Image 1: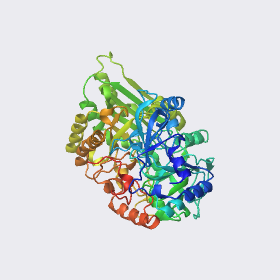
Image 2: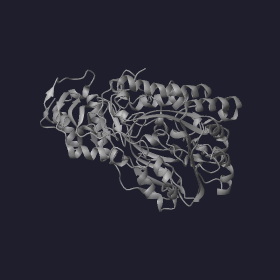
Image 3: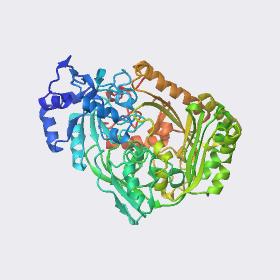
Image 4: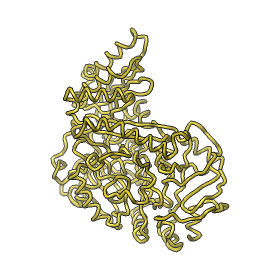
Length: 595
């Protein structure tokens, strides 16, 4: 390994290697010095070493080449620790991840994580490279992406694409890989009130165009004063052009206005062979199909997205919450009994039963009035009344009208939901629960029993249940997306999570992590049994999802996706865990826990 490559990887002039070695199956370490230097010149010095976020806090560092002494930087460490619960800080660092689990190597228990609650400066132990890519290019345009892809093709390097690192499946992290970081690719957002996709003859109406690194905070800020609303995610720091849109893209506006893929009008993408193409309903339709639901990090590097915007409108807003003095049986029965009705009314948001016996319903809808909402949600607050001990136990009941999308974005509920669990480790499973589950008395009862036994659960009301899908986007037509059709007939996206502190040594060994992720999956197995026609959202996917092909896409869609994948990426440079065309035996997937 040459001086440039080694210095990039070490990053510390005084470091002294111990046990220098090349990992078997790690071609990135065999790239000649001259090649790295040439690439660095092509990308104007934006070739960097991928370092774990917590490295400045540790005295020892181990990466692909060996173990090294590291001089802790106490000032930098303090800054890092103060940013552990700040999403905007984490997304600005290539080596950090919203769920700290995925920057680690869970299969070996090797990590460089810090606790957001227990601050140590310096931190005892070794900072491991984990699943943080060894090198990355901080791309500033199409040419940088083409240079990085050309380099990877020449040297057979597996590629990881990262934007903000929010993905709950860790698809933007992988050991021994070469990263492409799109986070800072953010040209000015543009509004075109009569946008015509390239190659199309007719305009599709008002749309905005933004770059690969744009986050929802920036998009919402742009449309706030324009008189429009946009379908986006709840968390403001989620990337609007990355795994969110390419995995389907849901949010509280989806029940009425559709998923992200339904609102997308066009994408520009650099394919694995370096070709830069524009994909929409009029040209490159196979690629367009794959990019809209086929999953991020798989078919190319998206550089630009154009999405439809809608005339802004007033919303009916409901925020109900109470720490009830009883168990979850009765409130869960209410949630299940009313699921289809609330879906038909267009409610988007969240309901669930949480720690401390806390019941929550937070939702918005443009389809019914405040008076109608009060009547519709009466079962919840009448139940609250019945267990309030004559009013001695307080609860929250706020049903009101909000004048715009921006007004909802400013509510404490929206802000809190978009910033939860930052810096923690998270094991998660999800299930799209179809409407027939709520129509049959037997499955209703079974669902209630399972949820009550589970104790803590949450249902995201984010499916396009009442969205009127355009004829061009229906199955078999040019605008069809790659998602499982179950999205459109499911009132709930049910989510189970186990959240834990990275500093808890009893939960971060390889054995403990395997058990935590396995237990979450096994709990969801009970829901899978009573929802055989259900599915799952890959962006909130289960590490041990038993049939991810059917759950995420459906077999017919997957067969088409796999054919496209083999055509555009025959060397499988772009691959991620349980993505289209993945191979479990590949070195880049070895850090996931194994059953």
